[in-house]
Structure formats: structure tokens, C-alpha cells
Length: 178
Image (cartoon, rainbow, N blue to C red; front, side, top):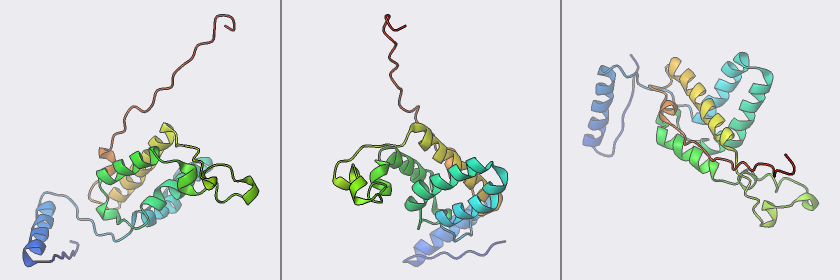
């Protein structure tokens, strides 16, 4: 058994939350007790789980993607409160945001080497479809581990599906060059 507390502005609100927790428990759904944020859990997962399971280059890619994309977005959100809607919105926002602007890459360059976003001219450097899909893969893997360790009642990332992505136009070579 795990002790949980529920709070509400009124007695009725608190009683409703308590009744829902009891119903979930009776239906076999484990109750999440973790107070960790998503960023804290992903850091724990990266160091203690992924580092021992994947190759060094894969680990470096995981660390880079989590540091640059996921941690800034989910630095304060609690792991137990994460929903599929949050993940879907995060992926959609990431796919539509210029990463040079979002990560401040151009502002970190020396004054004489700045060329786009720091000068007010957005370069529209969007992440690839593969990057967005890889972010979802990492979140699914990390949340699946949280599920196994009883940090979460279910893996909400498994409910997220991405669209087919953008299709590139293939331009055949002219007959003269072929």
C-alpha cells in the first residue's frame, strides 16, 4: 500500500479526488507516488539506465536531445501529471519551432560570427521529422522504465502517434545527365 494525500478547495472536491483514487486502485491501476519532475526523472534514467544499455554514441545522442529539447520544455512538470496531450503538444511545437532561435545557438556565437536569429533574421531551421520521432522514442523508453519501477501508473507516450511527416519531392535528373 502507498499512502496518498488529496487536496481540494472544498470538501466535495477533495472527496471526489479520493473516490477517484480508490476506484483506480480497485481497478488495478497503480497509484503514482513520485514527486519527481520529468526533467529530473529523465536525467536519472539517462545516467542510471540508458548509459548501461546503449552504445556510447547513442548515449551522447540521447543526452543531447534531452538537454536541448525535452528538459527546457518539461523542467517543472511533475512526472505523475504528464499526459499524452502534453507530449503531443510538445512534439508539434518542437516540429514547428526554429531551433536556432529556441536554443539561442546564434546568440552564443561571437559578435562578428552571428548570422541569423541573433540579428533578427530567422533562418527557419526546423528539426527533421526523424529528430521529432526520435524524441518520442526516447520518451517512450524512459516512461516504460518509470512504469516498471512503479513511478507511473501507465506509459502515456505509448498513446501518442505521429503523422507520416513531410514528403520530399524527388527531382529526377534530366535525360541529358542520366
